[in-house]
Length: 128
Image 1: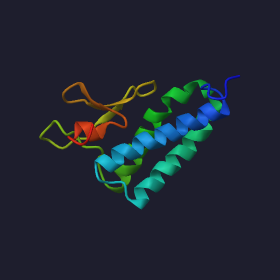
Image 2: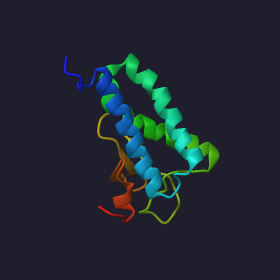
Image 3: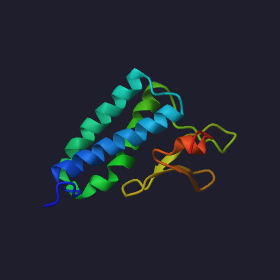
Image 4: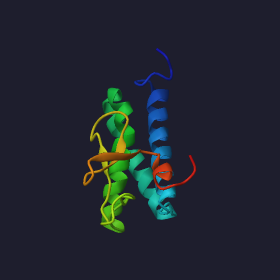
């Protein structure tokens, strides 16, 4: 078996570390990546580790799940995150697909993708 295959131990770790990096990039882009928030990411990754160990074929979905977990945890602690950069009324972006590959931050009001998970910096006018 290929050690980097999605269902392998290394593949699962790569998916989890990749999800962590993408969500941290978005938190950094929006200026909320303090120590407490990074701890929320670590907690989400730890919880999703069990999930992906139970369903290795879901490794490609873990980035969207971790993003949603962090978004939910932040709602309880500081309010809506991430805010839509395209609309005047403050509302949070949603993660789509809910369970699938290639997750994006989506503005439900406009019905369009704003950025891939991990790509909010570009959507907010940061470096490409």
